[in-house]
Each structure stands twice: as C-alpha cells, then as structure tokens.
Length: 107
Image (tube, rainbow, N blue to C red):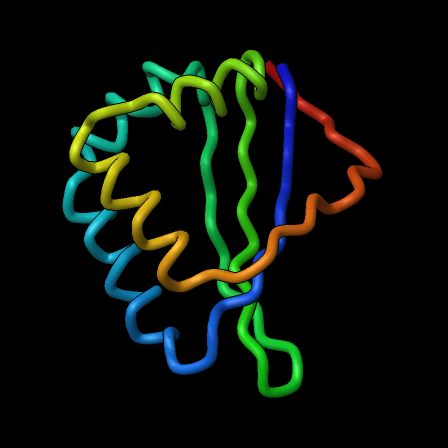
C-alpha cells in the first residue's frame, strides 16, 4: 500500500468553484467509486486549508500502486474523471507533494 499527500494552491477567486467541484463529486458517489476501483485507490480525501489570505487544497490518497493509479487517471475517459481533471486545472495552481513522516495502516 502506498500513500501520498499533496498541497495545491487554489487560484484567487476560485474558492466557490472548488466547493461546487467537491459537492458535485459527493453527489456522484457511484462514478467516484468506479474510478477509485479502476485506479486501485482505497482512500481519497480532500481538505480545505487557509494560510493568510490564500486557500489550499490538501489531497490524501492511499493506493495499491500510486504510479498505476496516476496512469489510469490520466488515461480515463469517464465523465467524472474528465470533470475532476478540468476542475483541478481550472481552480488550482502548483502542486507540492508533502513529506511523509509516518504512515500507519491497521488492516
């Protein structure tokens, strides 16, 4: 099992769009679960963070193989994946992988 956590800055004025993006994902759980299954992802979580005047998206994922999950996601033609990629490019700028200090997993 592999884990990644990224931080990406939300573009100025895009906060409402980001909230709508994730509301849409919550309203389409069957499509999201199919995507996670296709990618071999077990956990995908997103959090909103604010530092000063800037907002950030914190993304956490646990998958069998992160390289495989990324490859499948990039090639996916599912509508929910197209929407997700479009929103990410529209509302986010930059991407930093956070340094992992621990990753306990109790099966």
